[in-house]
Image (cartoon, rainbow, N blue to C red; front, side, top):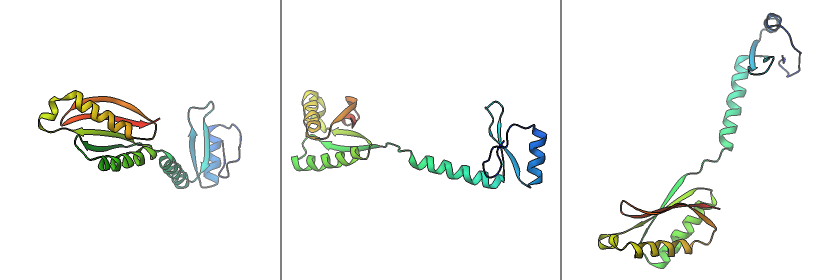
Length: 151
């Protein structure tokens, strides 16, 4: 049993705890129901709810959710365009996000798979930061798709 300042009042029966809470015009709230004996606190319910919401907000803010960012490249793209996209990928990886690289193919390019794999590997070698391939390159939709994350 805890009082409104957080001081330990010791183990007491439920009736005595309820009487003590009513005398102080506060609520008796069960904080840890799984403990033996359960832990209860004498506090205003509104204040307790506010503290709980504040705690949850703080926990939610501290969690970093990694997003899936997508970068689309073409097989016949110029070198400087590819370098610009490499810089963008570096930014995404620095933020801790997964990056999906999509190599789009047009027309007859779709049938030359070895050439497409070669182009994608050349692009992956251009990325200076250490990265791990989370999804192996595979054909899907309009070309090759792969996913990478920072090591």
